Length: 512
Image (cartoon, rainbow, N blue to C red; front, side, top):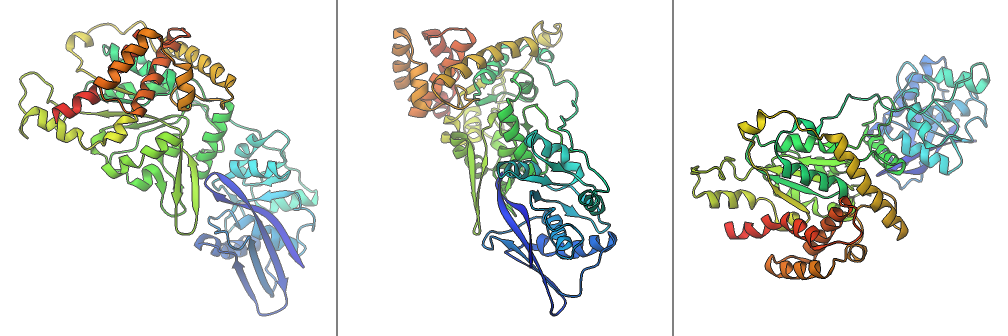
């Protein structure tokens, strides 16, 4: 007789159904696991053996075979411990034969019989709910699984004994409750920034339309402070965005205590990050920083110091909103709809734009051109807003804090986002679509300028040598500026300001 227990295998954030089949027959004493298991799965037989002994059970002196079907799907991770143990317990009669029929099971076992947390519980719960199954998962991840649906039957035991007692009726486990992560305190406020009014304006535009932003300025100008305050003016995550972000964090093991947070992600990798760390990959094709920043902000400080090949790997995800990681044995896709905020110095020494400064590496213009050349033109073409951030003077620092802070700016950003949500919903686009992410034909329709604006952008396209992508990105920024002004029509002033944020790209070749 074969005992079956349902579980899952992860491909990206998708949980694919896996059938754990346990057969115990007379023969030589052995415990074999087949079905393309990795090292962690192969070692589960020792964890299962120790956990059963600690729970007062012993493996029979027979031939035990565990098959993880489908056999051609690679199985990775320690979450197969619990379904294998429950399949063995059901096969030897320690659990009722039909107790596990309506559940999907995942969890790691300790040698004392306790069930420890694993990654990917939220995607597994979503998959179980879609298959009309309940879920058995570790107690630590119960609040995470409860978010998959109010009608989902969730059992979150702390040990094998507790689960066995529940099925025997001697102990009843309550359904875990969904939990939000405790607030980490107030976010940094724009009121902390003195001066830099043009940079604050660009930050507001970036937040309102979801645009990418590059800030170029000397050390100490406040570029990192400005970037850290962007989340404080972004709207909160929508329910759909919250679910997508949490599923990625669940697969990556980033959820603490099974609690979800409605704050947008803010990821700040060091410039020494490898391509696998930034884009994703490595053993098991894990999600990278761009996927962990999905729905939020990816801040790259000291942009030219990143490996150029690593930076160029961002180009495709910035366009499509997802990243495809191909390996010899499998291929996975992760969402990667992030907002890129980058900062850089004008040159390696950082002082090339200071009056009277002479760079030791050669003429200032050559030093700046060589440093900026580490960033490829195609990547720069995907950045909507490029801003020169001047150094803050002592006169700015002694001024009192500005009257307007993140609360006031966030209100204007929310109003602009509301206009975008309604506009693109009428055209059948998914929720959360912004001016920066809507398709090119749609932005041409909704950002069609007036006669004066058309003449301006036609002349600018020739003078600034705008690419097709640059033309559309100018329209996107102009549409956001019109939304901030509450105007339905994109006019010449909106296009003029949008073009001013691309002027630096036109000057860079001349400096080289």
